[in-house]
Amino acid sequence: MFEILDAILATAWFLLFIIGMLRYVRYIVHMFQENSYKPREYIEWMRVHSNVGRLLGKSLYAVIALPLVLIGNTGCMAAACLMNAMTALVNKAQPAKKPLVYTKRVKRMLVTSAVIYAAAILLTLFAGEYALQACMGILLLLFIAQPFLILLVNRINKPIERGIDRYYINDAARILREMPHLRIIGVTGSYGKTSVKYFLSKLLSVQYNVLHTPGNFNTTLGVVRTIREQLKPFHEIFVCEMGAREVGDVKEICDLVHPGYGIITSIGPQHLQSFHTIENIIATKFELADAVPAEGKVFLNYDNPYIRSHKIDKDVVSYGTEGEDVTFRAYDIAVSPGGSVFKMKDEKGVAYEFHTRLVGNHNVQNIAGAIAAAHTLGIPMEKLRYPVKQLESVPHRLQLVKQGNRILLDDSYNSNKSGFKAALDTLAMFKELRILMTPGMVELGEKQYDENKEVGVYAADKCDYAVLVGKEQTRPIQDGLKEAGFAAGRMIVVNTLQEAFQMVNAIPDERQKIVLIENDLPDNYA
Image 1 (cartoon, rainbow, N blue to C red):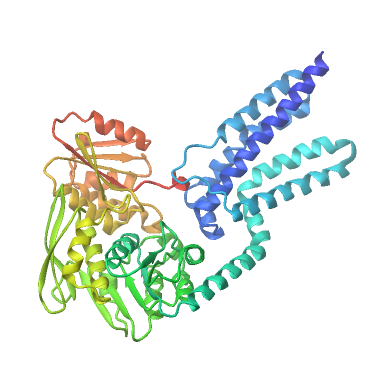
Image 2 (cartoon, one colour):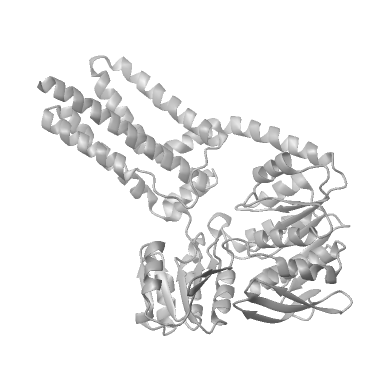
């Protein structure tokens, strides 16, 4: 009877181990995908956020289980099963803001991982009478090493991935060559590029057939996929968003699409962790300007000091909300819960009034850039007034959302210091109860503390309450608020976004609540 029980426990131990291991492999692949399949960013993520210890903790129960199995008596086998059940539990997939996408690349990584595991297990057959113990040991070792094994898998697959990528890139280049009259507008910047892309596409659609890169398809392969799957012979303009995390990323996209026009929306310390210096960020964003031919135009946001001070030998069209020397300047800006109103003059000095449902100076700034480009490409200012009025917020970019007795200013996508301050300025314009909800900014490298503390100081007189998500994550903002004299009783620190909403609801005030949601950490920061 005990032999049957031991066999059942051994089988249960093995099955629970496999479940926990598969869940762990899935999680590691997900995090590698979240870090753009880039080893350097993945390693930096583990280093900066102390994730090595946390990841190894996911295999702790399996480590405890192994010696219990080797002891072999019924009690130890039962305890080992319990440990592996805990392994499966701690590695259970959690709800993700951006779930793992089972792309063909991910599937190839999973197949390679399976081959490595299978090869390692086959080697244990040479251990003779100790084959079972060797198999257990090698499985456990691979389990523990999974955070680093994914780097080996990526390395093994690299030649295959390069070959596949090159085929798709060449095919996209062929499609573009077959459309010589297609006008291509590149849009890049540390922030604001997605909004400008959407706004510009809507305005240009008044007169042209326009295609833009969807969602966050702003990498080389994202652009390639857009061209191969969506670009048609009837399209007249292609608005191409160009993202970057390293020097040369924008140039790589430009070498593919050869933009005739370029828009640089902003420059700031976004992704400073991977760029290392602000000079590298500036050089990378201006790779777009370098790629624009002499007969093309470069649209520059002159509200940004890095852009304004960087001189280039190209035909520049400036836009913004500040300075009399700006070609397309939005002025007399008025903001209310119903949206914004502003004026803008054309190149002849004729003023036009624009209405938009969007709120915030940086939304007006982005619309100004879209108007500047659309008008330069031949659409009269008068003809742009109605489409500007019809513009909708890009999701999670200072999106105005009404929920019963409260209004959300959803600015939860990739916060940065300039955008954070602009959103706070918008919050300050409201007369209702103003609440800031944020986990702070990330990916700022060595400037992480100082930048977050600075916005904490800035926020002190812009909000009535501050609900901060993450005690340690928001420590710099807490320090900044305290330094600026913000009342401690109006600073609420919670662990999750769900708790934050609960605390907002519990704030005892009869006034309508305006809640600014500034940033929402991606899964690899959660």
